[in-house]
Length: 185
Image 1: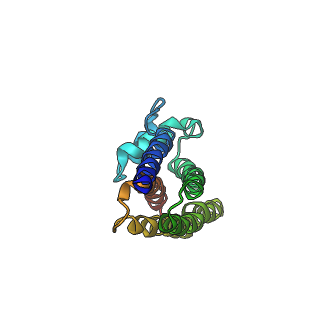
Image 2 (image 1 turned 120 degrees about the vertical axis):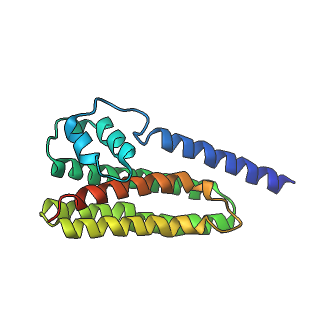
């Protein structure tokens, strides 16, 4: 009975942490939306998310060109990746369940490679004018987040343990990827 109580407490703690991370993702708070942001996000699959993250970041407000906004979106993806990696590290430290710890460690490695490592590489490629390699790095970012997400799609742990974190991270990477792809090379 004590073990079940601890598992429920852990799940509630994880849900509270997920809500905390989601509330800090910039989606709820939105500043003025410039025409440049509207235009850049117009053909993006996650249009509303694109508009929301770009308009909530002060670095986007003075940007007039799609390439400048794509750059900001890559920076935002990298920052969100670091935040998500810290969130996963916190969950790793909190859990006493050996299987969950193993799964979180696996996701930690994926986030370190993907949302942190690949977005940093995307920034370098983008700054060097190589949009194709930047897009490939962002695509790799999405793949690493998906690898983590798949672990939680099978029993015994429900997707909501990191599901919202993975979904938000994927949105950031996809928006950056689509914005970079819209530039051509």
